[in-house]
Amino acid sequence: MDSQYESGELEGVNIQHEDLEVDFLLKAVYHLSGFDFRQYNRSSISRRIHNRMKMNGISTITGLLEKVIHEDGFLEQLLNDFSINVTEMFRNPTFFKAFREEVVPILREYPEIRIWHAGCATGEEVYSMAILLEEEGLKDKTVIYATDMNEQVLEKASKGAFPIQKMQAYTKNYMLAGGNKAFSEYYKADYQYAYFHPSLLENIIFAQHNLVTDQSFNEFHVIICRNVLIYFTPELQDQVQQLFYESLSPQGFLGLGDKETLKFCQVMDNFQEVVGSERIYQRYK
Image (cartoon, rainbow, N blue to C red; front, side, top):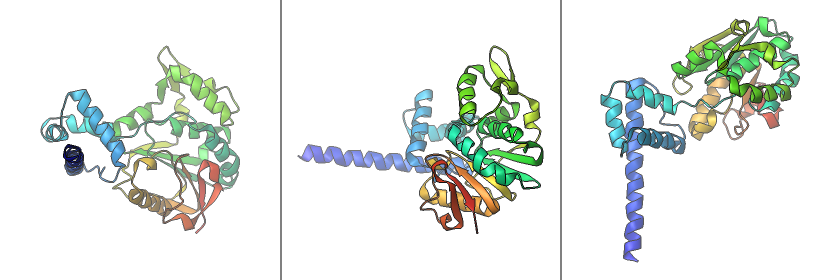
């Protein structure tokens, strides 16, 4: 009985020690880089930390912290680990189909359209939106601001080149999203990459922006931020949703990921559901 108690007590102490180490690491990252991950979902951050430790053969988080402080280039590696870059073209096709059917008819009446893709990663969903807007005749009067905290993924996004082996899945997504052309018309390919037409880039502005620490930079008719908030604590989600509310024009639209919602957020009373199943909302006050 005593040994079981002592073992459980020791396990609790070890967990407390690791939490303390993670706190110190994230504080150091913030002070050294300006990027604040202290309110990110702790289990997600911990997985990324342990993966980096395994890759570098580091046995403790304190050892990782030492490399962050003293080894050139290591902080940038860890920042890339923390950055969330999971995406695909026309991801969750029913979202894009609902956007095409429910939001586009309203946008069609606007003289100009400003869209903010927040947390755009390598840009697959940004290009998806550009294709959708071109097919609906709205591309020329739209500016898409595509932002992410990670400069490296923004550089990849600006090139518009994606692995050719993904095109079969992306073509299926495109068709399910209501696409009305041959998807291959939008790119040229070699044996390795599909290169999307430069015309899709004409009205896209890629820029670095940190949702945790940066402020609003324009007023938008549409904000898309899908599958990013799930990595934030509830408190940080509230903070970012407030940022989106302040950045939306009256009657502006907000699109979230399929596992995200405005329910229980402080700004919920300022929005109405347009397509609840697809997490498309409209600001009404």
